[in-house]
Structures are given as C-alpha cells and as structure tokens.
Length: 174
Image (cartoon, rainbow, N blue to C red; front, top):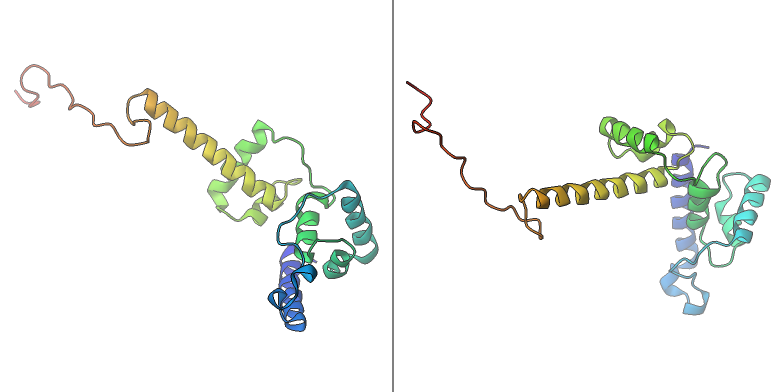
C-alpha cells in the first residue's frame, strides 16, 4: 500500500466514523477524543510497531483503538514520519541540506517525491527542514543587507544616494 492510498483510506474511514457517530460535536465532552495531542511515549511507539507488524498497514482505526487519546490519523502520521523502518532522526548533514535545496529547485514542494529521492527522510521531515533552512537563509540575507546599509532594522529599503558623476558631466561622449 502506498502512502496516497492509505491517506485516502483514512479520509474515508473518518467520514464513515462521523456519519456513524453523528460527529464529535454530538458527543458529550467526556466521550470526545482530545483535540490537543500529547507527546508519544516509548511504550506507545512500541505498541504501534507491534500492532503494525501483526495487523499490517491498513488497520489504523483498529490500532488507534488500542491507544488511549490517539486518532487513526495521528497513529498513521506517527508511523509514516517516525516509526516506519528506514526513517532516521539523525541530524541533517550539510550534504543533505545542499541536496534538498538543489532537488527542491527541480521539483518544488512535492515532499513525497523529494522523500523518494532522499532515502531515510520522511516527507514531513523534508518539508520542515526545507522551511527551516529557507527561514535561516532569509534571516542571514536580511542581516547582510542591514550591514551593507541597504535596509533598516525593519527590513525597509534605505534610499541610496545617486552615483557620483565623474569629470566631464558623465555624458560619455567626446
């Protein structure tokens, strides 16, 4: 099962659940799943790994039912972005960051495509790293422009004096 099929299945299952249950707004607060997610524990991660091993990649609703306070979408995202074999959480190397910038210039914001070109990194990790790197470069460029006197502290351009005209009036002719 590829990720797109699983995402579609999750959306269909959520629609089915809302129809069956009348939506979460119809439930008493005590029966609603929490809207804010809490951190995942090591025990929960191990349980997800075990249940995926036993039941496969299509049973997210069942797996979520075994975890208190977690939705099937949260469980699937945890698997996809952190627990799936081959996904690494090691720090990004300079080479990986340069590769990400170069590949992004070619394919744009297609995070799943980029993930296939960068084994070991999830689409979400790639997206987050790209945006963090872009913000860092923008801050660095802003600092350089401030130091060069091209912009003020608020990012507004500073008017530059006209270029000095040399002897002869700058007409360029004889």
